[in-house]
Image 1 (cartoon, rainbow, N blue to C red):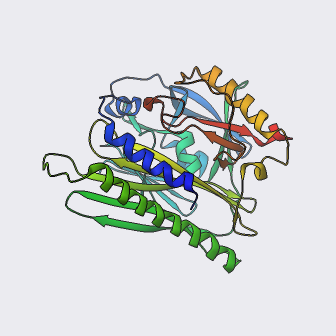
Image 2: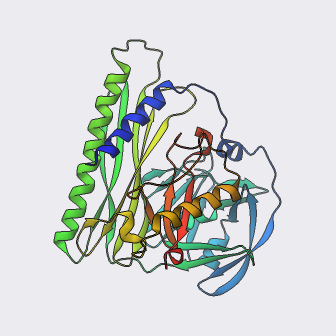
Image 3: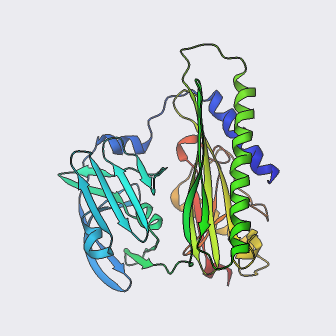
Length: 352
């Protein structure tokens, strides 16, 4: 396992243990329904066919009325009044949105993101968040303000979850990690699966050791239980590559926990991990291209930094999406906790 990645887990544990400031996130505000938002007609281009859907825009995020997904996108949706859930199915995936607490589960794994919003009897869901997890590419044309949706031709394989689960009197550990199946090359499949499993096990071990060292001999029964969770997100599964990340989250009390992100991008021809230089089109100037894009996006978004951003490392962690290479800042690396982990997508065309 990469030593730097193992250290990230310890950093996350340490940050969570000293975190005590009370903050109310924008997600919590949305979930609580503190505001009323204006509904608009948003133009969507789905595989070349344009339509207008009911939407609301909040903090540069577009929310689409859930009922629109059936007819326009081809997904199936079901609303349970008794459970207060919305279930979206399609492309071998099942996404369950809980309207009571804002939580979400994808194929029985809890995932994290902006919650759905219920307004005037209509449920709105964060469009990009939902569709990218259901196997679609999403783009936005700033000139026409049209959202593009493309059905991705995915690699011929299936993805299921491996689970590490432990519970004790004062702590719990739950890690989901991906495992591929039905892939044509059994050797590559085993190589990928073995690595992902061993990394999950190593992070679980590092978490146990860090929690034990940080907490010491705690006997105060009033302290909250320590929880450690690992959840994965598949971000790219096409063109012979598989890209994903695992978010490891630790909570030990206080206003919030802390998250460390560990990304992986595999070449499915060999089962090897690809470095950043391998996915930037062979452009020798990839570092300066990425730096320029990140700086322009920081300025355009008005992102406040704890320290100036100058450059990425040549072997910086990344993951892939349908339209580009994604760089991100870790928690507290350049931005305060409330900013999360800002992502910066560099289109593949920028490297040509």
